[in-house]
Image (tube, rainbow, N blue to C red; front, side):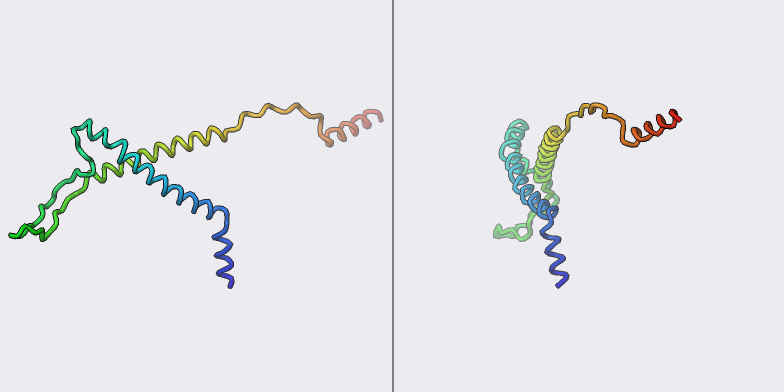
Length: 139
């Protein structure tokens, strides 16, 4: 029974719940950014470079093997460089957006420098020592 109780305490802690929420939101955010890159950013770049669709860029290592009937018996072996380029753009865009979000949040959380408080009177110890000194001077 101790294991179950310990696991329940662990799983309901604030940090674990915040991490779970962060992962879920991050996953949804990743899909949005992937769509932004694939559907909005990459088409104009492809147009600028001559109508190339980056996800179609492949480096052919070995052609497909076709039999006499025209049926493919072995698929072609390719390096899908276009998918890699797409993933790099996704990563860069996500990194920039997260950097900007953190920068904005940090600027909101910065505290204004506190003005120095007005000096208070001497502490109780200093007052007591001053009284003792004054009494000793009188004797």
